[in-house]
Image (cartoon, rainbow, N blue to C red; front, side, top):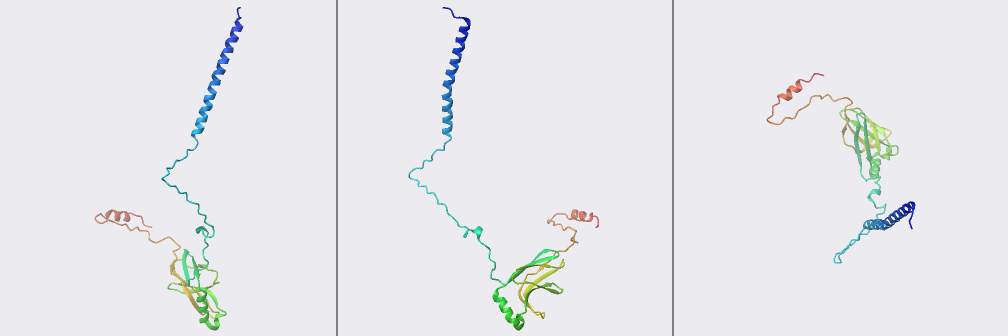
Length: 211
């Protein structure tokens, strides 16, 4: 019995489709197995330690904030009789101080009857000139002082009576305020090694136009 041409074409396409399905069905498990192997290779492998080697894991040490160096508060007082003076700019000084209670008590005892009305004050000295006083409170601890530029300064903290008597309890270091104008020194001083000619440096400085 002869089959028609259309039947033969249909059977041919049917065989081709079935063969493709068979091939694809055979390839899919291979792909899945490859993925499984790749994922299995990404798993961390255990480290085998020989029995003769002992491994000790340190325990975590917990530090409370109370004893941690990052949380230690600075003391309010250091138990010293001290006053420090420093320069901020040509017109201002900054000073900070600390006085022991025993030192203040001894100072009041020296003032006698005037101690009750005595108050704390800063006495500011300009080197080679006069001085002036600034009333302050002992617990303030620091103060800004307006001064003149290009001068040397020293400050004392003490007790002052309404009658003008001043008893110094601590004296600071001496500082100098910078000038409030550009420097007058405009000529460079060249450092010359021994054996080198100096005429080139002299000619360069003499060629500078006058200001």
